Amino acid sequence: MEPSVMDTKLPQASPLPSETLAFTDTPEPNPTITITPSPRPTFGPTTTATLLPELILPSPELSDPIFDVWDGVPTYLGDSRPGFYFRLTYNTRIWALTTDSYGQPALGHRDISYCVIAPASGGGLAPGLQVEHDIRKIGEIYFETNVILQQGVRQFVTYQATDGVIFTSFQVDFEEQPDECIAAAEIVLATLTSVPQSQATPVP
View 1 (spheres, rainbow, N blue to C red):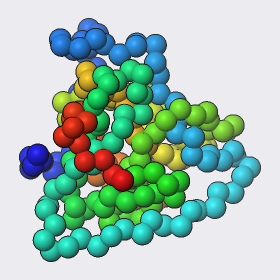
View 2: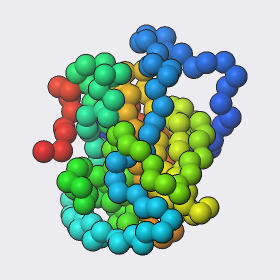
View 3: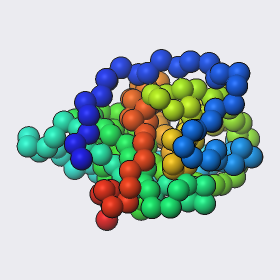
């Protein structure tokens, strides 16, 4: 399946409607489920973080398509329809599909060091961290966003969403240029959709 060309502008956020969102052809996900940050290491206020090595990204080939897809298993399998994967479409000149420092597939930004999109699963927050919750429309889907802060400084952001078929979440990590990293990541997240497992090309 060839991905469609995306608008490279960040979709405009819009306020959450007053009525509850509903999907016409599939049951709503459990409304009591809320996202928790990824179990990646977090640090309390008295701990000095040591940066992991920067990801090694494959160089794009001239013959590579401008856009490619990343298919993967939803992080909330119990709330997703069996037999479906998530799909994100990304610009191969901006992002590279690779393996992160924790051994899982991830997208690394080619021009912003330590800017990474990776699947996020359950986990707790270290002492001294705060969370700012929001719900915003990114692309055609409403995402629950969670900005993790330490002493007022953003550490990472998690995104949780469903298209009515799959229910999954991602974590966007960064060290420098957080605004640019988040903006670029949300362009990719705006393409979130589901695809039957038979049509998916998951990362080995």
